[in-house]
Image: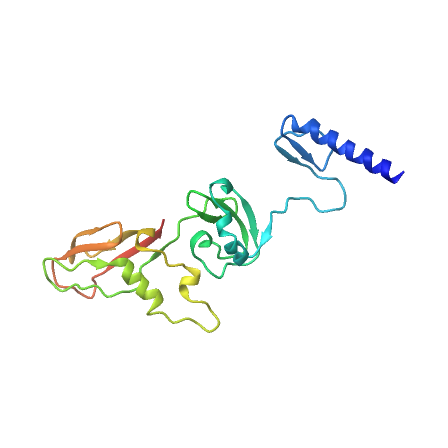
Length: 219
Protein backbone atom coordinates (compact mmCIF):
# COMPACT_ATOMS: atom_id res chain seq x y z
CA UNK A 1 0.00 0.00 0.00
CA UNK A 2 2.81 2.42 0.78
CA UNK A 3 4.28 1.98 -2.68
CA UNK A 4 0.94 2.59 -4.33
CA UNK A 5 0.37 5.75 -2.25
CA UNK A 6 3.72 7.21 -3.30
CA UNK A 7 2.98 6.46 -6.93
CA UNK A 8 -0.39 8.22 -6.79
CA UNK A 9 1.15 11.26 -5.04
CA UNK A 10 3.90 11.61 -7.63
CA UNK A 11 1.40 11.31 -10.46
CA UNK A 12 -0.85 13.91 -8.84
CA UNK A 13 2.00 16.39 -8.44
CA UNK A 14 3.15 15.79 -11.98
CA UNK A 15 -0.33 16.51 -13.27
CA UNK A 16 -0.50 19.75 -11.26
CA UNK A 17 2.80 21.08 -12.60
CA UNK A 18 2.09 20.01 -16.13
CA UNK A 19 -1.24 21.83 -16.15
CA UNK A 20 0.45 25.03 -14.94
CA UNK A 21 3.58 24.72 -17.06
CA UNK A 22 1.58 25.44 -20.21
CA UNK A 23 1.35 29.09 -19.07
CA UNK A 24 4.69 29.06 -17.19
CA UNK A 25 2.81 30.16 -14.05
CA UNK A 26 2.74 28.74 -10.53
CA UNK A 27 0.50 29.22 -7.50
CA UNK A 28 1.95 28.60 -4.03
CA UNK A 29 -0.20 28.24 -0.91
CA UNK A 30 -3.52 27.52 -2.60
CA UNK A 31 -4.83 25.08 -5.20
CA UNK A 32 -6.03 27.81 -7.56
CA UNK A 33 -5.05 28.98 -11.03
CA UNK A 34 -2.17 31.50 -10.82
CA UNK A 35 -2.84 35.15 -11.65
CA UNK A 36 0.81 35.93 -12.45
CA UNK A 37 4.11 34.17 -13.18
CA UNK A 38 4.41 33.39 -9.45
CA UNK A 39 1.26 33.76 -7.33
CA UNK A 40 1.97 33.34 -3.59
CA UNK A 41 -1.11 33.28 -1.37
CA UNK A 42 -1.85 33.04 2.35
CA UNK A 43 -2.48 29.54 3.60
CA UNK A 44 -5.10 30.80 6.09
CA UNK A 45 -3.47 28.91 8.95
CA UNK A 46 -1.63 29.91 12.10
CA UNK A 47 1.76 29.92 10.32
CA UNK A 48 3.45 33.14 9.26
CA UNK A 49 2.94 34.42 5.72
CA UNK A 50 5.47 36.15 3.50
CA UNK A 51 8.42 35.52 1.22
CA UNK A 52 11.93 34.94 2.56
CA UNK A 53 14.79 35.97 0.30
CA UNK A 54 18.09 34.10 0.68
CA UNK A 55 19.86 35.22 3.88
CA UNK A 56 23.62 35.65 4.02
CA UNK A 57 26.20 37.92 5.61
CA UNK A 58 27.93 40.67 3.68
CA UNK A 59 31.17 38.69 3.75
CA UNK A 60 29.39 35.63 2.33
CA UNK A 61 28.09 37.85 -0.45
CA UNK A 62 31.64 39.09 -1.12
CA UNK A 63 32.79 35.48 -1.49
CA UNK A 64 30.17 34.99 -4.23
CA UNK A 65 31.12 38.11 -6.25
CA UNK A 66 32.16 36.13 -9.31
CA UNK A 67 28.73 34.46 -9.47
CA UNK A 68 26.88 37.68 -10.24
CA UNK A 69 26.78 39.22 -13.69
CA UNK A 70 24.34 40.25 -16.42
CA UNK A 71 22.14 37.17 -15.98
CA UNK A 72 21.68 37.95 -12.26
CA UNK A 73 20.49 41.55 -12.81
CA UNK A 74 17.66 42.23 -10.32
CA UNK A 75 18.54 39.36 -7.95
CA UNK A 76 17.27 40.02 -4.40
CA UNK A 77 18.96 38.91 -1.16
CA UNK A 78 18.72 39.76 2.53
CA UNK A 79 22.07 40.63 4.12
CA UNK A 80 22.25 39.91 7.85
CA UNK A 81 25.47 41.87 8.57
CA UNK A 82 27.58 44.48 6.77
CA UNK A 83 30.47 43.39 4.59
CA UNK A 84 33.94 43.80 6.08
CA UNK A 85 35.33 44.87 2.69
CA UNK A 86 33.26 47.68 1.17
CA UNK A 87 34.72 47.55 -2.32
CA UNK A 88 33.65 46.33 -5.73
CA UNK A 89 30.19 44.79 -5.95
CA UNK A 90 29.59 45.09 -2.20
CA UNK A 91 30.68 48.73 -1.83
CA UNK A 92 27.16 49.64 -0.66
CA UNK A 93 26.63 46.71 1.74
CA UNK A 94 27.08 48.81 4.90
CA UNK A 95 24.24 47.41 7.00
CA UNK A 96 21.75 44.58 7.28
CA UNK A 97 18.81 44.72 4.91
CA UNK A 98 17.52 43.86 1.45
CA UNK A 99 19.79 44.41 -1.55
CA UNK A 100 19.28 43.87 -5.27
CA UNK A 101 22.01 43.35 -7.83
CA UNK A 102 22.41 46.01 -10.54
CA UNK A 103 24.51 44.49 -13.31
CA UNK A 104 24.90 47.85 -15.08
CA UNK A 105 26.61 49.41 -12.05
CA UNK A 106 28.01 45.98 -11.08
CA UNK A 107 26.97 46.68 -7.49
CA UNK A 108 24.49 45.54 -4.85
CA UNK A 109 22.00 48.36 -4.25
CA UNK A 110 20.11 48.71 -0.92
CA UNK A 111 16.33 48.87 -0.97
CA UNK A 112 15.77 52.23 0.74
CA UNK A 113 12.39 51.66 2.33
CA UNK A 114 10.74 51.38 -1.05
CA UNK A 115 12.16 54.75 -2.15
CA UNK A 116 14.98 55.52 -4.52
CA UNK A 117 18.23 55.80 -2.60
CA UNK A 118 19.62 59.33 -2.61
CA UNK A 119 23.15 59.98 -3.90
CA UNK A 120 25.90 59.94 -1.29
CA UNK A 121 27.34 63.43 -0.97
CA UNK A 122 29.45 65.35 1.52
CA UNK A 123 31.49 68.50 1.94
CA UNK A 124 35.23 68.31 1.45
CA UNK A 125 36.84 68.27 4.93
CA UNK A 126 38.64 71.48 5.85
CA UNK A 127 41.74 71.70 3.68
CA UNK A 128 44.44 74.23 2.92
CA UNK A 129 44.19 75.99 -0.45
CA UNK A 130 46.75 78.53 -1.59
CA UNK A 131 45.07 81.95 -1.82
CA UNK A 132 48.18 84.07 -2.22
CA UNK A 133 47.33 87.12 -4.35
CA UNK A 134 48.59 85.99 -7.76
CA UNK A 135 46.80 86.04 -11.13
CA UNK A 136 47.03 82.29 -11.74
CA UNK A 137 47.34 79.52 -9.19
CA UNK A 138 48.64 75.94 -9.29
CA UNK A 139 45.69 73.58 -9.87
CA UNK A 140 44.30 71.87 -6.75
CA UNK A 141 43.58 68.14 -6.74
CA UNK A 142 40.30 67.97 -4.78
CA UNK A 143 40.21 64.17 -4.69
CA UNK A 144 43.74 64.08 -3.25
CA UNK A 145 42.69 66.50 -0.50
CA UNK A 146 39.69 64.31 0.34
CA UNK A 147 41.77 61.12 0.31
CA UNK A 148 44.42 62.62 2.59
CA UNK A 149 41.77 63.87 5.01
CA UNK A 150 40.16 60.46 5.56
CA UNK A 151 43.27 58.28 5.40
CA UNK A 152 46.38 60.11 6.59
CA UNK A 153 44.88 62.89 8.71
CA UNK A 154 42.04 61.12 10.53
CA UNK A 155 41.69 59.87 14.11
CA UNK A 156 38.93 57.45 15.08
CA UNK A 157 37.19 56.75 18.36
CA UNK A 158 37.94 53.60 20.33
CA UNK A 159 36.24 50.54 18.91
CA UNK A 160 35.25 52.16 15.61
CA UNK A 161 36.35 51.19 12.11
CA UNK A 162 38.37 53.47 9.88
CA UNK A 163 36.36 56.20 8.14
CA UNK A 164 36.68 54.61 4.65
CA UNK A 165 34.92 51.52 6.04
CA UNK A 166 31.74 53.54 6.41
CA UNK A 167 32.36 55.90 3.51
CA UNK A 168 34.41 53.84 1.04
CA UNK A 169 37.09 55.66 -0.90
CA UNK A 170 36.67 55.28 -4.64
CA UNK A 171 38.84 56.77 -7.37
CA UNK A 172 38.82 60.38 -8.57
CA UNK A 173 36.45 59.56 -11.43
CA UNK A 174 33.89 58.03 -9.02
CA UNK A 175 32.76 61.49 -7.87
CA UNK A 176 31.19 64.67 -9.17
CA UNK A 177 32.70 67.87 -7.79
CA UNK A 178 30.82 71.07 -6.92
CA UNK A 179 31.55 74.55 -5.65
CA UNK A 180 28.65 75.47 -3.36
CA UNK A 181 29.37 79.11 -2.72
CA UNK A 182 32.63 81.08 -2.64
CA UNK A 183 34.04 84.55 -2.00
CA UNK A 184 33.68 86.29 -5.36
CA UNK A 185 35.98 89.06 -4.18
CA UNK A 186 38.77 86.51 -3.81
CA UNK A 187 38.21 83.70 -6.33
CA UNK A 188 37.62 83.96 -10.07
CA UNK A 189 37.64 81.73 -13.17
CA UNK A 190 37.02 78.55 -11.18
CA UNK A 191 36.64 75.33 -13.16
CA UNK A 192 36.89 71.65 -12.22
CA UNK A 193 37.65 68.76 -14.58
CA UNK A 194 36.13 65.26 -14.40
CA UNK A 195 38.90 64.03 -12.08
CA UNK A 196 38.49 66.82 -9.54
CA UNK A 197 41.35 69.06 -10.62
CA UNK A 198 40.33 72.63 -9.78
CA UNK A 199 41.82 75.63 -11.56
CA UNK A 200 41.22 79.12 -10.21
CA UNK A 201 42.54 82.68 -10.02
CA UNK A 202 43.02 84.84 -6.94
CA UNK A 203 42.04 88.45 -7.61
CA UNK A 204 42.57 90.05 -4.21
CA UNK A 205 43.97 89.48 -0.74
CA UNK A 206 42.13 87.00 1.45
CA UNK A 207 40.26 88.28 4.50
CA UNK A 208 38.82 86.63 7.59
CA UNK A 209 35.52 86.43 5.71
CA UNK A 210 36.93 84.58 2.70
CA UNK A 211 35.51 81.12 2.03
CA UNK A 212 34.88 78.41 -0.52
CA UNK A 213 32.57 75.41 -0.07
CA UNK A 214 33.41 72.26 -1.99
CA UNK A 215 31.19 69.17 -2.15
CA UNK A 216 31.63 65.70 -3.62
CA UNK A 217 28.83 63.45 -4.86
CA UNK A 218 29.47 59.76 -5.40
CA UNK A 219 28.27 58.69 -8.84
